[in-house]
Every structure is written in C-alpha cells, then in structure tokens.
Image 1 (cartoon, one colour):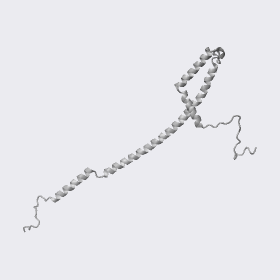
Image 2: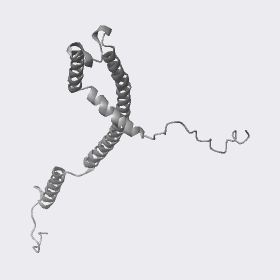
Image 3: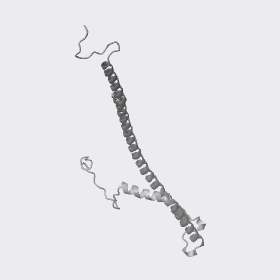
Image 4: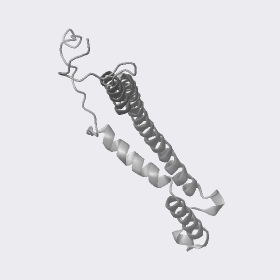
Length: 177
C-alpha cells in the first residue's frame, strides 16, 4: 500500500479489455472538417433524400418478406438511422467550427501584428519625410543660387563702373597741377 501512494513513481498502467488507440488531434480534426464540409453540401442533401426515398419505397411497396422496417410502426429503423447520423454530425460540425475559430483567431492575431508593423513603418516614413522637408528647406535651391550670383554680378559691375561725378583718368598721364 505504501508503494502505491508514492508520488515519485509513475502510476501503474491499467490494462483494459480493448486496446488503446493513439490518434493525433490534428488527424481527427481534419477528418471531422472533411465530414462537416460534406454534410454542408447540396450533394449530401440529395444523397440523404434519395436514401430516405429508397428506404420508404422499399419498405412500403417492396416484397413483403424482404421488408425490414414497417410503415405500421412509423419507420422506426429509419428514424433511428437518421437520429444516429444527426448525433454524430452535430459534434463533428462543432469540432470543425472550433478548429475554424482557432484558425481565425491565429489569422486575426497575425493581421493585428502586420497592421502594427505597417503603422510603425508608416510613422517612420512620415518622420523621414518631415526630416527631408526640413533639410530641403535649409538647402540652397537652384533659383536661390542664381539670384545670389546675379546680385554679386551687379555688385561687381557697379564697383567697376565710374561714378557719374568723376572723370576718368588715364594712367601714366600727368594730372594738371
């Protein structure tokens, strides 16, 4: 008894009548999604309708000795078959919906992260554009440089021109004294 209550040892594996099957959750999920997709198609509705009509026709007008579901009992076997199908279909559809919800959650999280990266990139580019505008505002433009050169040329030309009140003097000539 003391051996069984020890927590540092693994519990004995119980052996059952049936062997245990190890199935991956993803495999079960993919199969359930495939079934749920099929159950939601018009093809399935047509197949189920044909199956029910064939069942009803056979058990109503087929050979009396080969009928297996009587109309007098309200087609009990057909009701049981359809109930069994519905009892399996509902959990499979829910499982497929849960998997789709998980995928949507992951996708929306990735979309949020992408949107955050896009926002950060956009803000960075806006800051860079503002910095470029400021830098261009301090940079001399072509028209500004041309205007400054014209002003310098005008200044130089006015320095070289004699004033109207002065008379030109020749170099090397003696001035009258």
